[in-house]
Length: 409
Image (cartoon, rainbow, N blue to C red; front, side, top):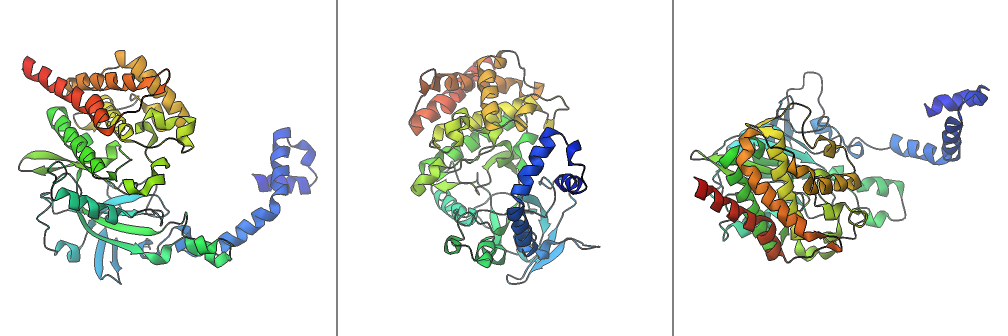
């Protein structure tokens, strides 16, 4: 559109443009040198810098089979599966998760530390920041904790194999351009990883007591990891999973690519999370600007929002048809979402009703929000110790809910 306006100006029809169109055009003309340089830079970027690994490029007749040559691992990607999780496709830098088959990986001896009975695998393709602690490194620490902590053991994902495609590092763009800060090129740069996990089931497919039991297992796992210095910081429904074991569903805290260790210090001020499920305290202007430390109480609140979300939007394991409750939160920015959340726990919670398959859990949700009410004070956010936050927001309401349920049963 801008080029058309520029052509109109050259053709002498500039006087017919509106005031706003003229303003946009003048801004464009002023920045024309920079824009031209940007085009030249983009023209010289390789496939990897565009977010396209040629190994995963679907050609005509592509069967989904690839070979990671330097690791000698065969992969058959199920890119057409309805279960594939991605906004668009397998190109670009969005995280993509899909089923995968591999003779080499399926032939590996099963790790006895992981009781997940599934033989199916999923692959996760994503572009994390290079300076951030990698997910495989985080999971190495998680697995060590699981050896001695029963709240963690069996409630974490099983990493089968991973590979870092070093040649895809976007730091090469700065180096190739000879920028002054090229020696610090890895800061803010991203690189392609592929991680293969044992397949899990979304927790949203469960209802009633099965769902609540799995959710509570994840709550305890998350708390135990936080105490040991592994900070998850991205609690959302898609990161709560389950698997079947001897006829029962076992809850799993999944996805550690935004996690960190508490020794990392300043990383506690990074804004990580998924907006509809983030604590309202992190959605303030200061929170968005990274001036609010991410503490355990924030993740505890996220676990409550997940509980609320599933109760209101899922019935018998299926997403309700539209219009669905809380739908606007998916498109709202941080500030608006905070307003919506405050209105929800202050007023709207009295009138909304859960789906019939989550009716019994709703009593717990309301008890949890009593705790949230008590930490958002007119004078500001009430700071709690990690243990106090766990007891006030999660454990206390859960014990009260269980006591009441046993009384009535």
